[in-house]
Structures are given as C-alpha cells and as structure tokens.
Length: 293
Image 1: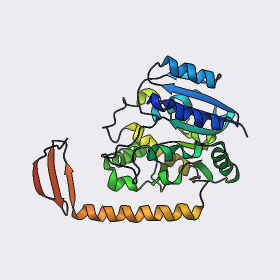
Image 2 (image 1 turned 90 degrees about the vertical axis):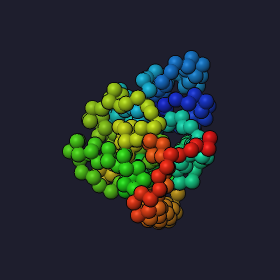
Image 3 (image 1 turned 135 degrees about the horizontal axis):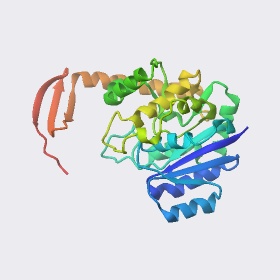
Image 4 (image 1 turned 180 degrees about the vertical axis):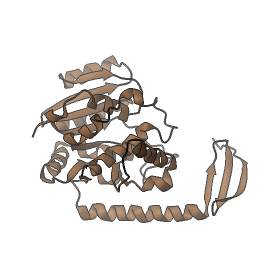
C-alpha cells in the first residue's frame, strides 16, 4: 500500500483537538497531511506542526466551505503517490431548533461523520475494507449515505444546480449515493477525474450557509457521482451489507411518507417573511409571520 493523503480543513477552531486525535489514529499508515485554514491562528499552527512536523499548513480563502479547500489541495498533489485519500474537517453541532439530518442533532451529527476515525481499530477496519473490496471506491459511516433522488423532493435548488452542472460538463445523470458532510476514505486514483476537470478554489463562491445550490453543495454530490461514474460504489466496511440495506430501506420509506404528506400539507415561512400553508400545493392561508424568538 502507498501513502495516504489526509486533508484536514479547519474552520471552527474549537474542534481542532478532536480532529487531531483522529489524525493520530491514521498515523499507523504512512501519510502526507495537508491542513487548510481560513484564518491565521498561530497557536493552532504551532500545535499542528508540534504533533505532525511534516504537515503542510496553508491559509486559504473562505470559499466553498470544506470542499473548495479540498479541491485546492487536490490540485497540488500527484495522486499516483497515494493509495487513499482521507477528507476531514471541523463540523459544528446541528442546533436542536434547526433542521436536523435524519434525526441527528447537536454533536451526534459530527460524531457520526468522525466515527471511522475515532480509533486506530476503526481506521484499520475501513482501510481493510477498501483493500479487500475492489468494487468499493469510497467508504464512510453508512447513516450518512444519501441517494441522489433525495434532493428532488427535499433540496430542489441543489437538485436543479446539480443537473445543470452535469449538463454543462457533458455528463449524464446516473443512480448514485453521496456522503452527506463529505468526510470519507476513498481511492486516490479516482480523484484524477476531479483533477482533469481543472476546477480551482476561485470557482467557488464565498462560504454562505444560507445559499443553496452553490458549487460546494453540487460538489458534495459530485464526489459521490464520480465514484459511481467510474464503476465503483460507496459502502461502509465496518457494518454488514444487510444492515446498511435495511437502514436505507427504512429511510426510503420515511422519505416517501414525508413526500406524500408534503403533497397534501405544507407549512413554511417564505423569504418575504409570510406564513404560508398549502393543501394539495394550493395556497389556502397566508399572513405576516410573527417570530416567537
């Protein structure tokens, strides 16, 4: 096995200690560590180099969340030197009052993203899955896998942007999954597909949580798409295939039920600040929304 390319993007600096432990768990393998940050935190940089003396630390523009800096790092390396890529980044908690991901709130969302890296044994299990499973191109925690049809009903802006992205690059849509939150281990050679597309950090817009359908969110999906496009799949090597299938069947039925309910009943606050209720997609109630904050 060749070396592992590890990219760690630090935005929320309070989570560096957590990521540092995860990277130490990868050190049992030969690795090259690239760390990107959007601000110059000398104390963090000193700690990075104290723990990982050969790390390459770079200050980058705050574009494309964690995806833009990842593309920035990809453009600097020769992927022939690596067997695998590990992508990590700081991830804030999901607020309870916000929209959770599959019932994950607070630190549960981040903990599940980091689950494959929480111990040396877990890192080994995921790497061994890639070594022994020639059809697996990317691996992560299975509860983060999303089918590409999900966005059609639940994130229409990104769905439209992704379809336009494929069209503009002469690509056809295919069934695929992607890893929500973009933390994974994957075969390095497959990312030559990304390198050949010649994207750069400048192509990404400044990071904005309110913006949907931007290039960063499109690329979150495209990183999964290009795995399947090259004849590979995404799978969790630490969990049985049957357990993964049962979980995603459950999610499919829940999403289907939610879509049916939305057909008959929708309640939301519009961008103009009005409370809107629809039945069978027909507006039946509209008034100025009064916040309870």
